[in-house]
Length: 205
Ligand SMILES: [Fe+2]
Image 1: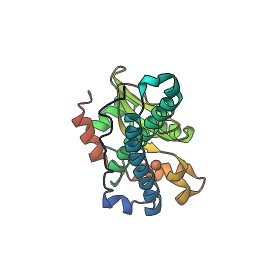
Image 2: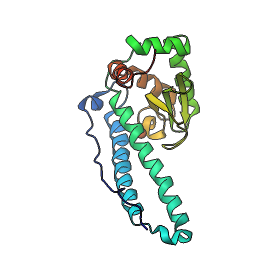
Image 3: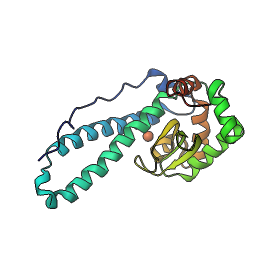
Image 4: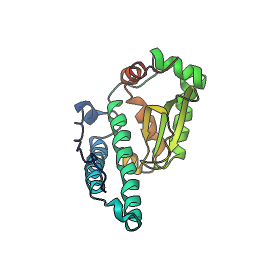
């Protein structure tokens, strides 16, 4: 018996023009992310097609194949989600947030500066990502760490800030100076977008 209904394909979202004119993050760097993102979308479509073809009746033979496909699926879908967040909330003027986001940072980190310092340090410690996410079970924000597209998000948390610290994110513009790239990331955040997410997902304050 084969798995069914898995192969509906998706297309990459278009890159908004503002992303090609960021302050301190070059067009070439954004295009590097976007090319990888397109690859994750293609890989996601390809893997779901391949899963449709897996014959579960011969399960003993397919466990290793299934394992490889399912691991790759988490990497591809993680890469899609992470980059869609990243692209969507850049293109703004940075600075300190207002509104609900400011209240959430003050409640859960003490201040906006404390949130920023913690996310920056988390990004310096990570191999791939650092996210600010609202954890619905804990009832608060955390700055979670990620080493790859598929590690280490936790269940039942809604990401609100996604800081890409893979080498492709900073090496073109800053070589090994990741800290300066992270500062540039903060300078380009669009807080209106993040406040819209807080409202859309009804994050409690
Ligand atoms: Fe990236």
